[in-house]
Image 1 (spheres, one colour):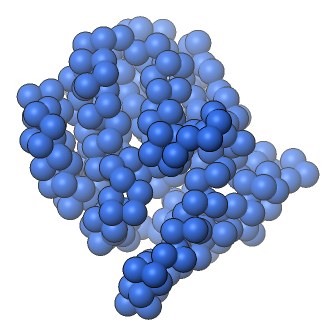
Image 2 (cartoon, helix red, strand yellow):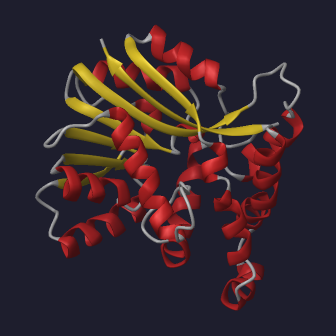
Length: 274
């Protein structure tokens, strides 16, 4: 049974965000490999791909849901001159992101608040774009989240979303046992399918829906994560980490397996409010 709860998710990111930053940089998400890029370049490519597919405009007012350490928010502000509100469940992430915004001179265009994305209520028709990379996995009512996004977007506004997915229930590659184990270790409330997200977007008033399977372009992420675990410094601190953290880390190899076997997929979605 999945025992993930909001407090466990908050605690995880409060405890490990500095660790993530040190090992993986300011982007806490997959990379998107086109050729032989470095991990840092691949992470930026993921952002570029999502921005291109959503056709975001310069100067858009953007809500970054699950902003982490602010990497996407800073990119959107610098490259597209967007005004960005980033929300995170973690007070530690908020403080780190604010410090980084000051160092980049972006505090006038990027703001961060602590919010529970399960309970989003940031007004009606308040944003030109909503952006979310690898956050909805942690949400308990994903369909409600998509509806809330539609409510908060202005007419014609765009939603860009990247998320981990599970295979369709009756597909040959489905492996619910493996996915449940990964969800427990990775603190995912559940995973939806491609068809789930498309249905939720259609039902919430979105059109121009594009849903792409980019698993092959991102799966190298977990190979690199496993390599990081062999660094002497990481091996030295692993025994000092709590059981939940160790379970999270052992999930790296299971993620590789799930992608390789097709039990999990990586989806990149864009849609426009009609």
